[in-house]
Length: 85
Image (cartoon, rainbow, N blue to C red; front, side, top):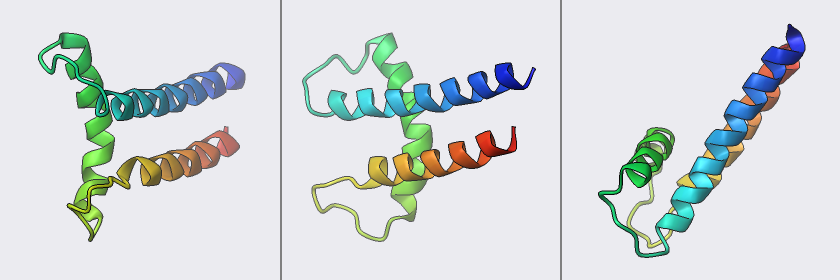
């Protein structure tokens, strides 16, 4: 039971990090913003990135630090949650 829970939590955090990476790459390439798959990726990634963007004091500098901070926070939370399982 613990192994199954560990695997589910680990894969969920890894999937969320992967979605954020895909979101970053989508911001660099032209794509159809009305595509249903892309809208799902944006919705999932932005639900994590938007609170971080709103909390950052520096905005509009041309570089978005929120994915970097999100990766650090997700990695930290992942370690804490997995250490308790």
